[in-house]
Each structure stands twice: as C-alpha cells, then as structure tokens.
Length: 302
Ligand SMILES: [Zn+2]
Image (cartoon, rainbow, N blue to C red; front, side):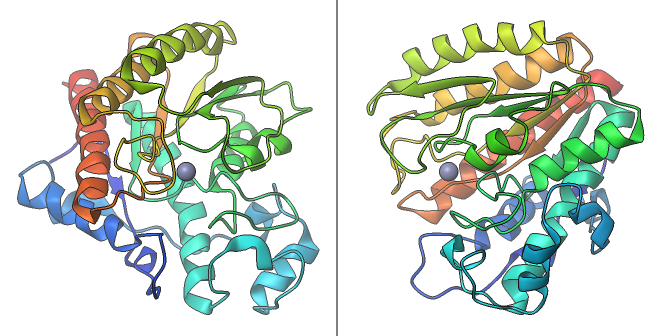
C-alpha cells in the first residue's frame, strides 16, 4: 500500500476522433502501475465534482456559464477540443483531482494526479486543449487554506504555461516558472521566470538550464510546488522539437522531485501534455514520472 493515494478519474477517458490528444493515456498509466506492481487498485482515489466557488478562484462567472451550457462563444471555441458534456466533465474532475493531490501532498510530501496540468486555460477563455486551469485553481486553493503561504509552479511541459503565467502575473504569493520550446504555440505571457529553449535543445542543455532555474525557484522559498510534468519535450513527440530522451526526462523528474524532497516542500505532480507518435511512449513517459514520484513518496515516508 502506498503512503498517499494516487488520483485518477475514469472521466478523463474522453472519446475523440482523429485528435492529437491521447486521453486513453491516463487509464493506460494507471493500468501499467498496477500491472508492474507499483500500486494496487486500492491506492487510487477518484475526485468528485468541484463546486462553483472553487472554479471562481480563477475563472470568470461568464465563462463558467458558457461551459455549463456548452455554449460555443469566443470564450470557449479556442479549446481545440469538442465542447461536450464529457470534455467539460473531464476538465471539472481534473480540477478536483489536482486539489486532492495537494491534500495528499500535505500529509506525505508527494501527491500524484494522473491527469491535470491544463496550463493554457485563462480566467475567461479556453485554449490549447485546456478548459479549466487546475494548476492555478490548486495554487489559489492552497493559499486560501492558509496552510501554504507561497506556491511555486514548475512547468516543464513543452509549451509555455501561458494561462498560469497570466493568472499570477501580479500575485506575489505565486512564482511561475516555465521551461519550454520558444518558437511554437503559445504566444508567450510573462512568467516569473521563463526559459524559452531553441528547437533541438536536447538533454544536456535542458537539464543544465533546469538545474539553474530551480535554484531561483527555491530562492522564492515556496511552501508548495506544483509540478506540470508534460512529457511532450520528448524527441518523438508530434508537437515539438526539444529532443529530450526518455533518460533525459527521467533525470528531469528526478531533479524536480529531488529538489522538493531535499527541502521537505510538498509537491503536487500533474501529467499535462504528451503527444508521442506512439501512444505507448506517452504512457511509458508519464508512468516514469509517476514511479519517480512514488519512489520519493516511499523514501520520505519510510
Ligand atoms: Zn504541452
């Protein structure tokens, strides 16, 4: 039995036709964790639907009304996902999922959400496969509990966490860090710290830059880290060209989680992007992140 529950919802498994997004990855990662003996069925817990008040921590009421009514408006159409009850439910459960992982992280220092990381969502509109910014909502939620006074978001997805950067641009309690490929989507917002890498960067440059940046992140003295662990920097990803290897991504996960563990800073892990040519690769890479988190969870809790 694991020291903390892993968060997963069957609602993440939405059906999409000919889409680059691979929602099946979430359930496949869960199955792989069970098959390979890292977790058992009882180690997983499903989030419930969030209440309106929680969503309003970040999103505007006008936009939330559109989502509820499945209304195609300038606020909703940029999601690049179908606007259906299932896709909205998936986004809603993802919000509670990341919050639940935060609660797990409070007690065992590592909270793993096999979902979430929807960092392109803005307060008043959807973007880039993201309807609701679970990362930002979780940060605000954590601050509101009073148990956390400062939050750092460590966004290692291939794409800049533009929604998150925008949301917290004037919030001194949240440090937003994003390391991403510079010359692709999205148009950049200003994070507290941005590292925009050139196409073809590779493991060595990526890890050097990340290590240097993490020093700045921890100089902020966060009491919670939310790790956006997208695996789309992978060299065989359809959407980018950062050329990280599987080993490079493992080093990345180990570095981020290790720096949190060393300082006893609770870390919430969210999956975010991953669009490898082979879905098995996407699954393998998210699985790698999950087991790295489990290793730290065990080391910290005996
Ligand atoms: Zn991405």
